[in-house]
Length: 257
Image 1 (cartoon, rainbow, N blue to C red):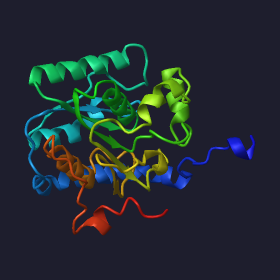
Image 2 (cartoon, rainbow, N blue to C red):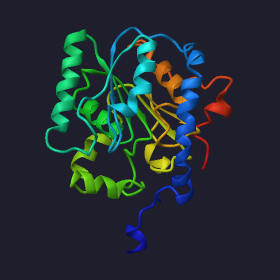
Image 3 (cartoon, one colour):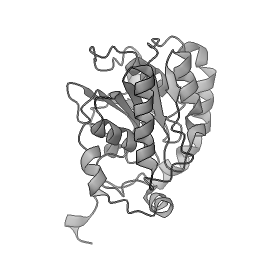
Image 4 (cartoon, one colour):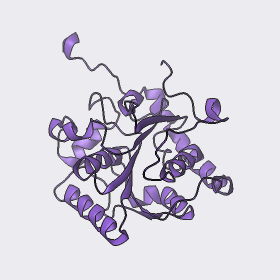
């Protein structure tokens, strides 16, 4: 392979991959801090669709969905078992669920996606922006090389498809035409964090946390940030305020590596 074709972004190191074991601690911290997390703004009851990551199912997003329900949202899993990639019927199933939630509620749907689920979330928003209130992704690889992760071989094995998918990515990589937040961690051991960087804009932002990839869906800093983002009025989106805890809990996402 020549220098010109070499991937400019490398997958996370083996040390960071081993450090993914801290996800158990992060989940415990999210549960332990449940009372404090109730200080986050309450929602208006609109539906929220939560999409799981690669080889994960709705069980992986249970803590996140229960937390959102406790803050007043109508949170739903994707209901398609384990996420083995965009196999036949998967994308149609997500689209049908999105339309159903919007029709039953009479409201737009917020879509949250963890890792590969965030790629789906951006795809849904691109396809049906009139139905999507906002998009929040957690450690999702929507830019850069498809092999700048430690999961691309697993993806190809379970999906039967190449990780290089320009047909879908031409809809995923551009910022969705709805308020968009990318939550990422520079200590992510699965996805290279640079692949989760959104281009900041009038309705687009990055929020950095210090977390593992596997712990993002239950990390207390992530739970609070998600609730804060969802609580915004449809016509009043503003960037996330890192506040007094910024340097410790929410580092500056724009700082140099």
